[in-house]
Image 1: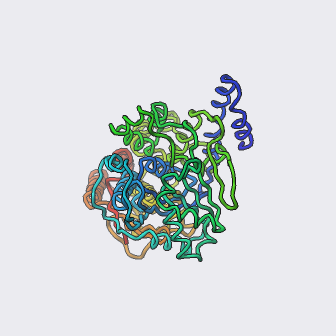
Image 2 (image 1 turned 90 degrees about the vertical axis):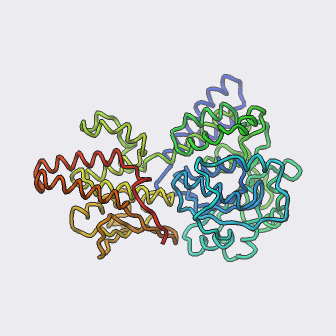
Length: 500
């Protein structure tokens, strides 16, 4: 597949008609290869360093959307904005995506003036609910990165969307981690006299070039790949919360005016694109361990925009082992479920729909606690921005129905099954459905809100009192109640989450 894509990419600079046909075919092949290549486990484990520019917002959103990429941490270093300002923007972006579990690090403020465009960038909100204060602890970037590297089982790719200062300090202060660095991927245009990212800390670039660490420098050395109306329309038509957030941000009047003046291009976005679809890029030169790459010659903007769209959509795709795609044709479902299919997927996503559907099939009936368990499992994965089979779970629902039915939903929702040894049932039983979830040295406690738990208990008691225990009428009542919870309960509203 990728050989075909490469051949087509190299043929793009033919006649206009030939170019158009190849471009459209290339779009299709890139999308299919990207989606079908996903195996359920990430290929790339990354730490992202950002300097707060608006293209960083787009790049971070692309990284968070990718099924094949695990974002282990994000650090905030001075460049376009000061570190404190960047921290607020990134923290609120993560909250908007419900990925609050991705840890943030903070660099020290440099004794340097911010660039002229800092004032404009500071005005741009990365999320609608942007709070100046954050509940997240402000850990230094060096401390956070060191904590991530310690005992992490996979090699880590360091992504630099600003200067290389944070990573140069890591290598200098912790040489023991060098062997665990897969590579550094950095946005910088080497074809201008000191690009901005380099100018923030030129000594860091010089230092890392001398180290035996693969450094891939991604640049846009053309006057193409603009953030323009065509780009925005592609993003708006992309079915993804990440795309919706980018589209929302780019409605800001300051950004619109710069787009009209053709002052915005794909810059740091290309780092996220390169990591995921490297076949769209070419290596222009190498110097030792340093490679300089750019987008393939004459690759149409349409191909690049569609590839970005495919990345942004990948995060809403289900991970399937038996199905090519999980069935969502209404005729395949019983009438009561067909009625809620479209609106429920629209509100809560296909991933939750699949988890609850599979839970009901495996559980043997459409149950209340099992559905709540599946929703909680999806919320836990969303919090850490991980896929199935990555969390370690302890439940406090015991082993006696109906409360223990909750455990089935948790297992299906997270993939933390008994067979994989990723779930345990505590001897302590709590009346309110509760779990602890752990990932990469972080642990949280998630529980159903007290008012929701009380509502569920009252409605179950009503069913028992009205229809008798375990009668046919009772089970029909429970099924209707469960379907209502499925379609009305928002997983981002019905749980409390506390860091442990």
